[in-house]
Amino acid sequence: MCRKIHLLIQGGGGGGKNVKNLPVVLIGSSHGGYLAHLVSKIAPWAIDGVIDNSGYAKFPWRFIGFGKEIDYMEHISVGTAYKEINLHCFDKTFWTSNRYSPNFFSPARRKIRYILEPEHLAIQANYPQPIYVSYHSIQDKDIAPPDEKQELYALYEKLGFKAKLNLIKKESQIDGKFIKSLEHGLDMSIKSLINKELPPMLTQIFSHPKPPCKNKSISYPSDDLLYHFSQKNAKMHLEISKIEDA
Image (cartoon, rainbow, N blue to C red; front, side, top):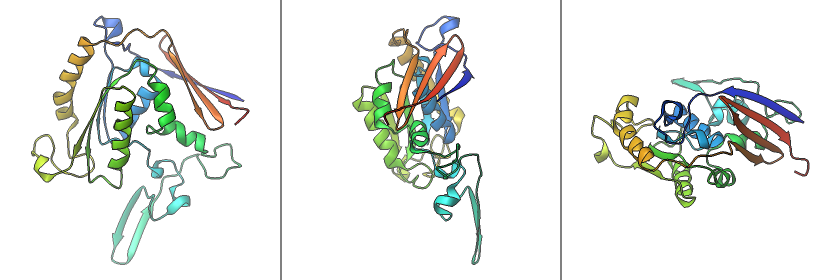
């Protein structure tokens, strides 16, 4: 069995200064930060840097579409309370916990979506490495657990990536302009994040450009599935095949 998906991408990567090969820096907050890390996982040769605010290292189960089946008190999408009444709302997607369904969200499908996946990070480390900069609150327990983010960035550093996690731990670090709270997202504007971190990142990219990468494909074994991502011209291709011996 082999499934193919085609995605269109634009841009070059590689730190070059000509129009066809401009640096590609992904910037995002919360889910956007998660997606920025995920794109750098599936196409590391195309991404020069990631600037993140409060992205999660592992996706929250509430986004998959059957959080109610796992724990209806914990994995809620939206909730509110009035006196003794708790109202919990849930998203519903095509994914299911039914292992007999073709839409079963198997461990393999979970694994490929995790950023904090040591086996996959070791594979990514063999490719041109993006630069990572992140901000995260130590109090962000419910949405993006800081211990998972710390573990991710420790692995990045261990594998040779240029990765810096700015963990905001104290109220004294709140300046009212850049960092405004210790809640998820730090009440930080994307504009202030860009103004602070993009110029120094571009300096690093231009000073130490990534070497050209001829092998624009990467494969991640995930339990019984093999995810193979490749870039041809301006398109990303995904092939999912069954690992027979798994």
